[in-house]
Image 1: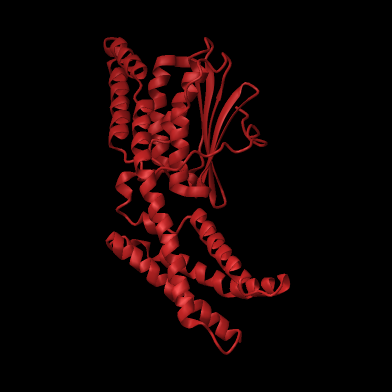
Image 2: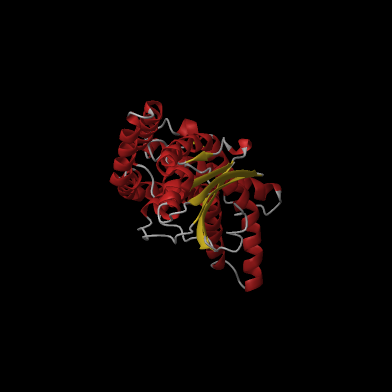
Length: 349
């Protein structure tokens, strides 16, 4: 199946609001400064505050630009130092109570402010360096950043409960359960070994659906193994109508992804590609590592048309949890083009 160019001109699907998991708020997510998105937002926030503050002391636009440049030379390294330390000590910070984590962030901000003043002193900025003022400013900005991360974690919790329910509803559909059981019953007498394999695969799918915590992450290899189990069940049901193709990069298997990410996507491929067509359809799952990024594709032909259009719950759920886990580094795109539907995802390697 030639699918490499399907999404070459696609505009990225607008991400839905991110929702985290109720169980993860206890584990220092308020201080997870290791996401690229958090780093970008922190730098932009602090630089904006400094630029606005410089307006009040500037005599002209030129003077303002000079002040902003000087402040940036001190502030940017300080912000990056705060982020690097917070990210590097994430596991240690996680052991503190929530108030201790927040106090650590504020104190680290004060040290970052002093670090910025030290850079100004080394650069010969002037005889009077505002050490105390810089410490208080650093602490205040750090408190704002930490408050933003705490609020972000708290506001995502209720939405995650709904996302979890939607995930289970999208995953354990009654028609799939009944069809699988009917398939196993039909095989019991003629092919008991195959019937046993079908029931074992079904049991494994249910176990993952009920036990997986959407806030955790698993390896891509584990997700591939689970998707294989699902497709093996559907292969028994549809026989030659389901034409499977796997193109897996072994170097991509260690990438971290949300649990139960691939199964709903391959289920949609079967439902909208194979089921509506008497001739069946092709389903291809591919992974590829490209430098520091892993690209995952689920592609299916739609010879019988896309069938009854669903509500998109499963895809939105996958997209939400992908962006939650990897922030701006987690990309999700989907498109129907030239009789072929493709979901394309990117995650850090």
